[in-house]
Length: 525
Image 1 (cartoon, rainbow, N blue to C red):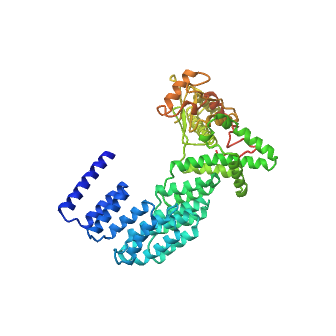
Image 2: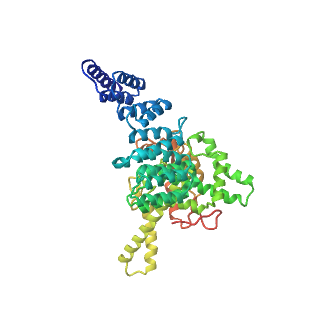
Image 3: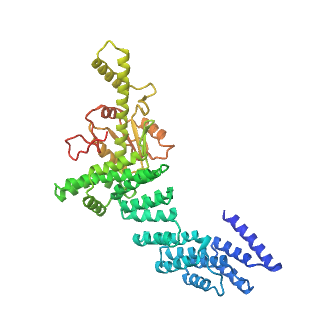
């Protein structure tokens, strides 16, 4: 803590004072004290020690000058840093700059802010290439890295790639993962999946493996650009997974893809509808769809898009020709890379999702998972029935199996649970935990359009509002990870309507609708 640091600092000061009073402090003693004050942020004391050092006629070494440069940089006094650097460059009164000197100064000139000067940073980089050679040549990477990152952030990707080429050809230094992360982020901000692919191929050739930071840097850049970049983001994700077997997408990347898929699906349908309807009809459809979000009073905490953002998103969708199927493919990619919304102990935890549309996609996928489980269960029953009743015809066996399975699927054990080869649903129904207070009401609107209709209730006010409050109160407290999820972020779907939807062969949801319905999408079951 701070008191312990201060005590250690006081002891160090007393030791240094003792050395100065009774001994003969060397340049390294002064440098050590300067470094200590620098780490503690006492920049004025760094300069005081340096002045004492010069008065005592101790010649500073490269480390001393590097501390001095860092002190001026941290204080925002770039002229002082430049003065020290130039005196080192001449080599008359100061030692020659080393790799750390160059990288410190280049980094300071490359950082965003009033002191940024990329032209001067390039001049210092050129000096570094001439000075740092031989066995220290590999350290040049720390000078190239901040300048390449600054160029990539500024969108000057061509210049950034030229620097990488200079680094490899002239300096014979391979780029490290930090440089590649900067290039990936730069291309992602432009939605350029082809550029990302070229960077990933270069990483593979140079045997540089991506880190967790690589994934986060890449997909945070896609995310900051907009939901429409989810499609090129999937392409980059696929390439990374194909190239490096050990690569795993970060959970936040997968949840962003799910949210993006839901929003793209919604607005791709609105754009498609707008091609045949008037602009007034388009606005009416959108406003009706967002009515719950407006009335919720917490839209700032959700992924509610303003009118201008909606227009920009829909323009991007039109320009890029994004269809409903493209949006569903983004969701399928998230599933392929490890996103798995599963029902456990009568609950579905979707608290990581930030949009109602992504939440609906996850709910529908989880329910279709129950369909698959039921179909497998039917097949097992048929096999057992055939082996146990060889005297009967195959068709009779199949009919009996269907009847038996439906009974098994809807029967509940005395403790109020039903086991369906994995998922467990309590008698009181399915509870969906969402990530925002504004989500449940909007999700309820979407789920009410499922065929057969799902009976959905939002749990209000923390005590199970509406219908069987005592049951819901206990259920929510029991499944919300120790009360971490507020009840007002929870949805309740009745058991009977879930079973009815799962059993119906003509079922439809939001993502996968019945053929022949408006804006229908091919089912991916």
